[in-house]
Amino acid sequence: MTNSETQKDSLENLSAEKWLLDLKEKGYFTHFDQEMGTVARFDSALDKRGQYHGFASRWQLEQLLAYGDTICIDGTHKIYGHDTNLFTIVVKSDQTQSGIPVAFLLTRSPKTDVVTMWLRALKDKLRSDFHKDYSPRVAVMDMGHVEFSAVKQVFPEARIFFCVFHVLQAWNRNFSDENLGLIGTDSNIKKSTKHLLSGFIGQRRASSYLVRSE
Image 1 (cartoon, one colour):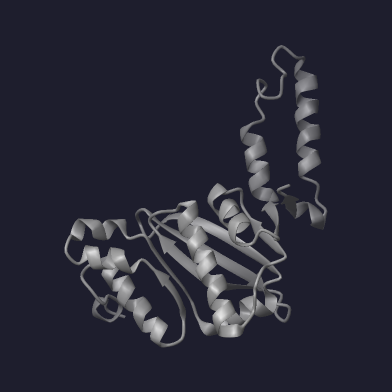
Image 2: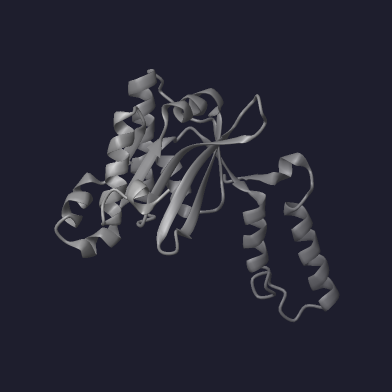
């Protein structure tokens, strides 16, 4: 595809807004900062500060309702070669046993209030279009404060689990002698202590791949 087919305006933020308006007409869930798009039309410098663009097709919303008892929410930072952040909600299909991405948010402002507004708008869309008061039973994520706080605000009943890979990363970053109170301790005792702590969190049972946040 050429740029003329994918870019609907010379300003990135306005181009994205026009895409979402087209998607909205086709029945998609869309969530974007319309005021920022209007301002950017008169000040191109503000286009680089576009707040958020969220979307999901009707089919994706149906999959969220069908398989969304447990969701995974992940934030990927600095995509598209600059300061854009992508938040994705994924569910697992009972039929294929594979993940299905069901909603996306692109933003240059990865703050809790932005992600919270996106999740709340998504919840409202499910209520208005499907007459379902949706809330996941379980939400799985890395240890990002933004995702954690947003889910707690919008889905307070959801049980939150952290991916053990990211928990292990955090543990390893903090496994210093000072943090463990091992300064001046025999080297064999240090090694044994760190090994025991690593084994505690890194057991290779299926249940150990999730660590509850509470």
